[in-house]
Structures are given as C-alpha cells and as structure tokens.
Length: 458
Image 1 (cartoon, rainbow, N blue to C red):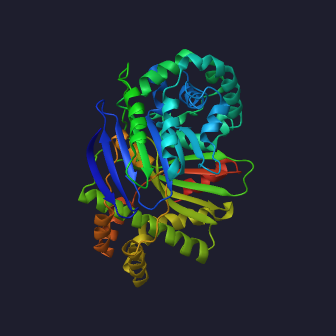
Image 2 (tube, rainbow, N blue to C red):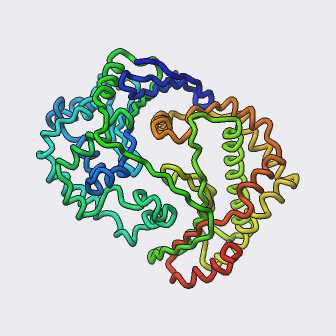
Image 3 (cartoon, rainbow, N blue to C red):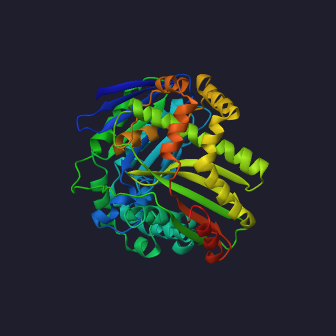
C-alpha cells in the first residue's frame, strides 16, 4: 500500500494517514498515542440509496447487513464466532456491530487496543462471505427483520420519516423511505437480489477502511486490511448520485402526536455542502462563524427565552446532515401550546434583530470573549470510536473537506471580532425563510393559524 497523505489533528491528539492499495481502495489510519482502545470500520457508500437504481427491493441493503453477521467460511457456527470474539482472563473481548442508512453501510469492531488483530481477522471473514450459505439463513432473517419492521410506527405515524419527507421533498426521494423496507418489500427479497446488490456496492469506488489505535499498524493487521481491500471489485453498473436544488422558503407542516402533551417546533434552513476536498481560508472562517453563531443562539434561547421569559422548556440550535448535498441548520424547541404565539414572535425577533443587537452590547462582547477562550484553552477529548469512521465517510463521499487543521482554526478564532460575527449573522441568518414543522397533540388548523399569523408566515 502507498501513503498518499498525512496530517495531525492537535485537538484530538492524533495523526491521520491515508494509504491507497493498487485497486485504489483506501485505508485511513488514525494513530492516537496513549489510548487503550481501538476500532476498525469498513464503510461502503450507498446504503439504501442505490436499491432503486439496481432494481432490488427496498430493504435489501439492510437485509445484507444482517446476513454478513451470520456464520461464514471461517466461523461456521455462532459458537465458533463467540469463541473467537469473547474475552477471558487472558484476552480482551472484541465487540462488533453493523449499521445501514440511506447513504452508507458500516461494519465495525471495537475493543481494547490488544484486540485489533482479531478484530481485523473477523472483518475479513465477514467480507469473504460465502453466498452459497445464504439459503440457510434467509427464512429466519426474514422473520426477524419483519418483526423489527413491525416495531416501527406505520409510515404515516412515523414522525422522523415524515420530517424527512417534508425536508427532502420529492427531489431526494431515496431519503424519504424506511431503510429497513416494508413488510411486502422484505418478503420479496431473494438471494439473487442480495448477491446482485453486494457485487455492485462492495466496489473499489465505494469502499474505505478505517482503523484507529495507539500505534503503527502491525503486519497481521495490514495483511487483513489488504485482504478486504482486494476483495472489492469494479461495479457491474454505473451508479449515480443526482444533485437537486433546495430553496429556503417558508413552508409549514404539522404532525399530530396524540400521546404528546407539549409542542415540538422545528425551524429548518438548507445549507449546501462544500463540494471540495480541502478546507480553504474562507471555509475555515465560515465554519468558525457558523459554530459561534449556533452557540450564541443556544445561549440566548436559554438565558432570555427560557430563564427570563419562561416561554419554553428546551431549545437548541443545530446543524445536521439531510442528504448527499445538503445539511440543515435551525432550531428545535419544546413549549406549551399557550406559549407558541409568543415564542414564534420572540424567535423571529431574535434571529432577525436580537442577535445583532446583543453582539453590539457589552454583554455580547463579553460572551464572545468567553467563547473564544474555549478554543485557546481546550480541555481533554475522550476516545471517539466514530472519529475515523466519520473522516472516512467524508473522504469516500467526496463532498466534504476532511483535512481539518485545528491550529489554523484556532488562529482564525483568535482574530474573530464582533464585527465579523455581525456581518455573518446579517448575511446568513437575517431574513432567511424557514421550513417550519410542528408536532403536537392538537388539530392542525389550531397550530397552522398561529404559525401563519406570525411574522414567519406573513
């Protein structure tokens, strides 16, 4: 394997190195001296997203996730798997899991740093799966997954799914379906569907392997990583990811949650992802300003709207992933119905006037200095098993800058001023029209009347 890039993350206390194998599958190694933990992930881009393009039923990717955790060529029974992974007084336990989303699939192991060789060996066995054994497990897995599916609310009663539909619209329809599938689609999945999906998604273009531990990788671990990398093949079908335009404009949706006693109010704005591999000075600056603005909103929602005015129980500004090309930012608020009208008025005032006014006051300037101090004097950061996996996804997805330089960001933070904050708020926050989602136990007309009468809806 060939080293292609290396950088230090001084905040996390790690060195990240990217290697490439001859078939262009990449390995990201995160070395964090002093840690007693390790983890390994194999990340496949695609998840449920490619199912329609490949002509397989919804839920095929999730079905595959379960299948690869079954006995295989090397470990022929569940007892053999347990004997290999479980710990005793002479060896530590290896933990394992797998996860499927719309955008990706992950197979992972984690445990004490001494387990990395066994961990990598087990992941090799999963990816060298004998598909001729599939028939042994299909019926049992189908029953299990249908039971899992029936634990979920029905589609029209699934709040998370309805939020996804509201925000993704008809454009990103793949992100508006349950990854697990539904009962009918699960029943229709065949061995052929699973193998066809696997042959196209476990490909050189879609795969990255990540390892995080405390030292250089040993010979056995490198051999196992290489075995997984060389199993990836060129896809049989050219899989595409389509980009669509999403607009920040006022839209309203209501979800009636009959068992609730209060209101959940979500204000969401689209933020286009940066389609570059590296952070530029402008991107670092934007990243810093966005984080500080989010912290400022959280501070004022808590101190002014909750503690002084008692308008809500909790409120949090957030930034989260929506789909391949778009993030969402906004506010998630919980309040009583009696306070909804006043809360909407206060939030509108805060976003469009209050943030700037606060920053101009001595109190706001003092708050900013305190926030800056958090980055000048960072505290210890615990081991994060998702750190390298998250970096790996950023690399394989090709739409996020992944090489983050904390020292340079801290340099920019030291130069941050109230004037820069005000300019960012006026350019990025003031005047934005949000999508507003309300979950409540009340009739839609009652909530809609209040929202449309507010300054957001007028």
